[in-house]
Image 1 (spheres, rainbow, N blue to C red):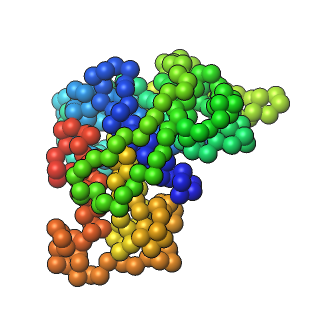
Image 2 (image 1 turned 90 degrees about the vertical axis):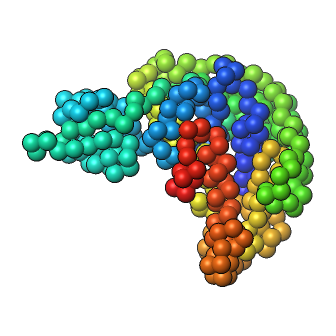
Length: 355
Ligand code: SF4
């Protein structure tokens, strides 16, 4: 992903977090990026969540529950029960379930005890039904003819599978109408104006920038995640496909939503190097984006690593003397982003920022 694409994606995420209109007006919107399945990864994922359910989800902490933990947590009973009586037959050896139980218990998302040499489990809280809708957005700032063809093919597959409730493509406002109309009619099109909206201020400045100008060029059709989907396995001649049962899609959606909950869209700080002297966050419309003073531009997540030729670590003294708050600028950036992620997840405590 190029620098322009990365910056575009972060701006779309920031815009969506503030301005996305969910189908149900009282839904909360969680935004994450680079999520999906083994076969397909979406650039931006919006989860429209039931507010009470989202708050109840916080009982399970800020980290995502993977598929195994989710299985255990959702079926855990209110009262102590032998685990094999409480959980459905997994269809694979029970020892893997026991491992998941131990992990869940260590994470504090399940109670576990041993009675007469038997493992008993009890839930810490009911796992809520918090996901109302999932919206997938593909970010393509530069939509030339060949990118448009590849994207149209990809979106057709998304529509046929119907894993998300809606699929969209976000592109620059100057994308030509001819290219936009190549997209499948069931996919929505957002056109995004991207002014040069960085001004060099660090994000700890509290003022806000004007919003991105985003217009709907084409409304999507609502897909049906509760229906059997069609997974295109080869778009050759003939096209081959397989069916994706509704139950399988439901499980996949639950896992995607969990990942979105755990990661959000600011998780780039976990893989980039905010502890480099050249790293900065700059105000952009609706949010903030990483900026590299050494390169004099916005850097990509891939190039901002310890192997970057310009990497210059913070002097140890910055961290030891608690500069300027505690832990140096790199830690401060991570803390700032974690705090913003937490704000979108009501019910989590401040302690959860550090995880
Ligand atoms: S110099 Fe390299 S490591 Fe440092 S902020 Fe810039 S891209 Fe990241």
